[in-house]
Image 1 (cartoon, rainbow, N blue to C red):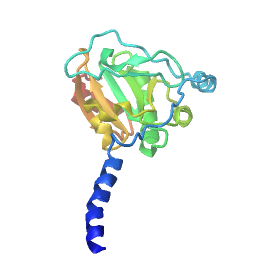
Image 2 (image 1 turned 135 degrees about the vertical axis):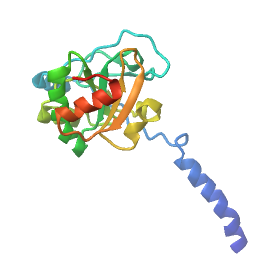
Image 3 (image 1 turned 120 degrees about the horizontal axis):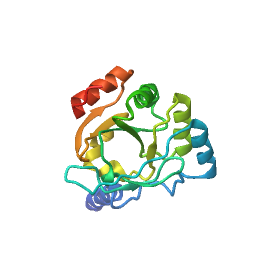
Image 4 (image 1 turned 60 degrees about the vertical axis):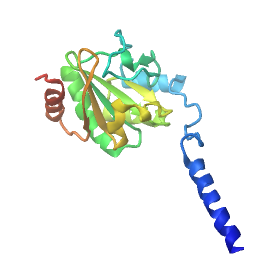
Length: 203
């Protein structure tokens, strides 16, 4: 009996490991709607801007060729077509530090959005209603795309977000990703310093 158990144990371990592998289990959520009449109504009430599709071609060292829907309705965005200078902020509905820094990003957007664009990504988040509620609570009007399926989790350009959120990705005028940083800013001055360090733009 002991010999039988010893023979079976490795088989069970292998089966267990296979079952936990990404190929064996589809951990993605069911279809999450980020554009519904209710979400559009909230977005309009907030005054959140529509997403703006890019006009460039994919470049080496640029954002991945992944198309994401606009949070709360609006045009889809192929990230690879975006051009900066741009600050991309990765956030989630249930992220406390995100809530703390979003007012500073909104103030930056109001003061400098004509020179350095701000784009949010509701990253790997299946709660678009909660995300828009957080945007409304923090007064955010800069646009956000949504990634409810976790499509960006495997993308090198967004590895910083896998270490925790909020997080920043910086894109220059040629569409190249030139830097990344952990979030947690509390003032416009901190965002300005990040832009100076990562994009070489003094505001």
